[in-house]
Image (cartoon, rainbow, N blue to C red; front, side):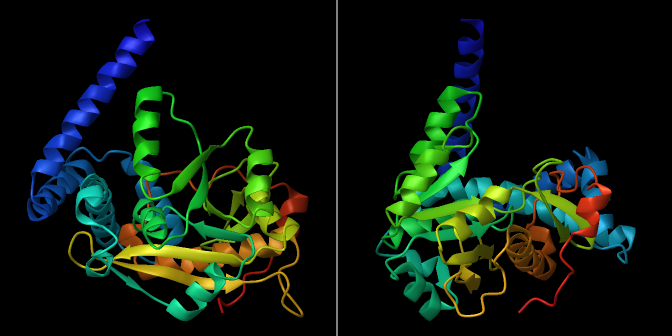
Length: 311
């Protein structure tokens, strides 16, 4: 009973905060995000050691001042992203989505979506991936996303209602293997985050020159179902709610001489492309989450795919 009361109280606070954000113009949210980013990144240094450590791994050549700038940009992006998500249902619709997004690589993007085959879409903690899923539904392509169920059931239901508003359905991270397989057998679209640490027993890839674990299932879903696989993104362009969206790379297991026919090779392929996106806009990546956890054993380190130039 106490836990339910606490969870519901937290839910009410979050709803009140979102209502406040929705009452403010996005221009005001933009200014507030800049101010709050200074507090979070420079005054209170929230998760400061983790952020700075991650940036030092990814960009060892950067000065402390450059890392500080990216840290501030990251916090501004995250805070503004929350504001954008709150405003999206009221501001982005089937009739005006072109005012808020520009689709890149449109021809292969649409051709792959209309192929009549199962599709695996991989993104990362980069840009506004929540908006990316929302837009896919507006485009007429419902998706299924594997995500961890929140401990607070009221918040979990509220967030999933937002995601499902245009047709983004959430599958729980635990125990959803049969559901995922059914989605792919029915030629559905499965969307996954490809940059989550997965522990010692998972697949190891090279990310910014350092081994990082990733879930084998991401590549297994693609290879096991001969599903075209797309690395996609939604990157903010200047003003709030103005994004560039689309695929940065697409591969197909049915292609002749397919180069990524094993889990390590395919995992390294999408990791390389995610890294490329982050390098282009490092201020829009979630540096506060621990991407590098642990170290692979001697055997796994030896078997890491050699880093290739991203095609």
